[in-house]
Image (tube, rainbow, N blue to C red; front, side, top):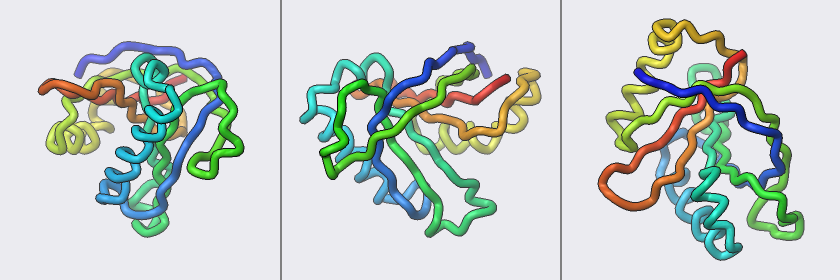
Length: 152
């Protein structure tokens, strides 16, 4: 599987969180609601250039499904600390191997199924940090998502 190397800077961010099973309809609804919030707050350009980042905070093999945390975030310097719909925070940047995957359930499942093999085959040295999901594309039949694997 092909990849590119990308360095992400440190950023201020706005985020929303769901606690519950990964891949649930609640997470899909959270994405819809977050996209509406992004549009309402005139952050479409940031979404197009930097994407919405999804982060699975817990290992579902170690954490009960009902306790798994999933965040959606957007990098922004704007202050939304008074907005009760979102949280503010800091993102610590780093070096990532970026894999682009067709945004279908099958392709995403295949990526996760083969992640260990992909890391090994590409001789990547990873760090103990969450793999990020990045979503930039909205329209068309060729929707893709990117998986950012943290590296040393």
